[in-house]
Amino acid sequence: MKYAYIEITEKCNLNCPFCPSAKWSGHRGEMPLALFEKTLDRLQGNVQEIFLHVLGEPLLHPQFTEILNAVDASDLRLNLTTNGLLIAKFADRILESKALRQINFSTHAYAYLPQEKALEVLNDTFMFADRLHAERPEVYLNFRLWNDKADARSDTWNTTVLKAISEHFKADLSQTAFSVRHKSFPIAGRLYLHRDSRFTWPDGSGEEKEVGTCHGIIDQCAVLFDGTVVPCCLDYKGSIPLGKFPGETFDSIFHSTKAVRIRNGFEEHRLEDPFCKRCPFARRFR
Image (cartoon, rainbow, N blue to C red; front, top):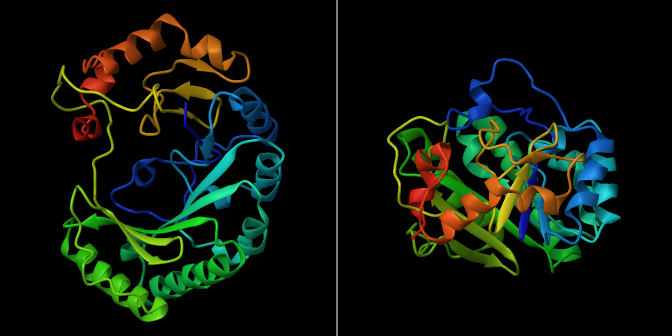
């Protein structure tokens, strides 16, 4: 399996209307460091790369530095997706991480901040990108704009971001219109602009579809903050619990009757679980 998404916290310091975090009443919890370390043990040798989110802003974890230390002590490669509000605070430690493969900034989220704050955070991400480009040129960085054609507020902000990136990095972004076939555009070195449409998070509601497929269980899985293992990074409610770390092993979870049934269904373009049948994201795959 290629990816595992580990939800070290579901807390976020933004309240974006497109994200399920905005709808939670209260804070569910954070993954204890000891559970995170045991989760890494279960994943080593079974997945190639990890992310530190399902929901939530990973840099908010009170032991984020220790989390990075644990990842660096493993054989896993790290992909970090962050809104960037705390990037200046953790820049030095992140740049030191030997496990770091890629970092993604969710710049589309800044559309819902006051303009002055949004530009301040965007500038912080630019400062980090400059350092990364100079100090760690082998690491990928994506400025994500995932609100294309979402609403007028997002469209206005997207225009601001594109202009700012063009001016700061002296990059020609005139040919970066979003399309389903071409989403990633080079800025400099391994710095990229990544554009996409906004998608609807699955919540178990909506019309059922029997035909479809997914990368869940085949290429990816997710571990929620309490150790619950689910098929994919969109199952933030744990609607399809497959097992739980550290009490169960990776093999026992993904060779279970339930996991095999769902995986076989995906391979045959058949949606087995009710959650998958109502998932709008699964319909993107052909």
